[in-house]
Image (tube, rainbow, N blue to C red; front, side, top):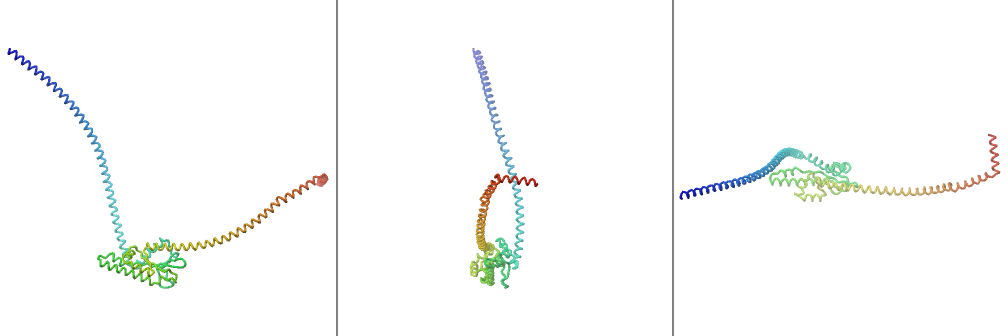
Length: 355
């Protein structure tokens, strides 16, 4: 009995082991299927992720290539611009050196009173040329006044025999000292000396007798300062100089203001010439009107004579011709009568025998 029980226990245990083995194989098979499915899904996800990463890497590579090309282009442009800038800086340096040398030469040249005068006259002639004035037509240069020793630099010819004189004055030495002074004391001393020079030039021009209305001048004279900075410096530092000059009938002019004055002078001359020309034109038109009336009267007379002659010719052509034709018709009618016709035949026979 006990042996049977033992056999049954062993058999039951073997059946249990066999069931456990089957269950284990089923579990292992199920796990393997799940693992395979998970592996396939993981591989698919990995493949998709890899494809996406590859696409992003390709896009990033293209963008990186574009950025690299852009950076290289910018570098080339920067190098070229730096080269151009370096060339421009070299050219600017060269031009600065040339300008400095020219300025130095000009300053040395203008240190001479004669050179300043020539330079001032050159500036004045440039302004005159721009204003359209012609020498010996609109102005005279350095022409003595009535065999006297007074010689203005320029004399402008105005209508009705009037004239306007102008001198070129250029006090520069103390102005340059003022610009180059290193201390306030030196600048103030140079400023006072410069203004004193300007007043000296003003007094000099007022004593030359350039304003003489009895001799045909206008009641003022021009004082040309051929530098805008110097002219502006005078106005800025001492306005009383210009006021005193106007009281003495002296008009200060810079290149710009001289051009304006000359434009007014030329306009006045043109207006005067236009007025004179208008008078001459009116006189010519008056003479033309007179001759035109005489021409019309003579034409009327000739027209009347031609009308009379035409009427007489019409009478000859119509009335007189018809009357003559009537007389010829009468003669022809008489000739057609029998007696006259026989006489005509005898006369024709006689003429034939004689022939």
